[in-house]
Image (cartoon, rainbow over all chains, first blue to last red; front, side, top):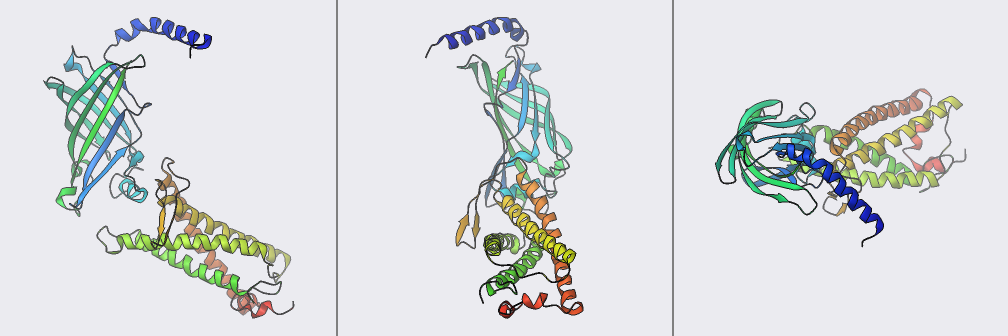
Length: 198
Length: 185
């Protein structure tokens, strides 16, 4: 319903947008991952003794990226993940994964990814190279990513969204999986996220 | 004989006391042992299953025990006023630590919203869950409260031996038989 109050709010929003416009155009390629709307997921998939898979996700993280279709070689992405936010829908298993046996979240509370390069491979496809720090160990990884979509959203913002996945060998991050079957020594990391242009 | 009197404990209190003692010592030993088990141990799932189930039963029994304690007479304390006060505070601490240990254990297993199955007979649902690091924090509280409870319970046992053999009082015998509840003090 239109009331004097909502009209006032709309006018105020328009005024703010007008003032902010030159600023947002100046930084047209900088995006913040939409954490508030939870349009972002960091998930993993690892074999359980070769019988099935355990799926889980990290629920507390933040990210930002730079993406300009005209300037793809400068694309970059950074993520900070709070390791203790791991959730696999089983409190005692989560506690075990976060213990010294695996991720040791007390000692290494955050995992980070900082990209160092991007190579476009096809329309909407590319490979991000970067430094992944997990369990206190930093390794260079490559992650193929796909641009899923970009454009105006219904709420006055501009969004771009991606997905990517890669395989991590746990021993490279100092996580000892020797006593487990071969199939458990690596996991698949999957991320999908959309960012709101700043 | 079921009920307490001012001169002694009835069978309900005596049974609850010794069943609790057995369960507490058993839970502590099982908890200690099972947390060190290898993933490939045959007891890796079975141990915690028994620990959780017995823990929930003890929690329910303890709530019943406290209700019984509040609505029943408490046998008079022997010894001086200071000794009686110290005994009273010690018993309060035992009850408090027991409740903290039981509730914190419950909060570990239910931290993600799943309930606790008690020997497959019934399920105690989760009530407080989803807090950041809940399982980890509850786990820390569970360990320290359980350890403190065991140490205090050992002191409780030693003092009861002192009352029995050195002070020649009925303290220990009153917790072993309800016949003392019949005597007039």
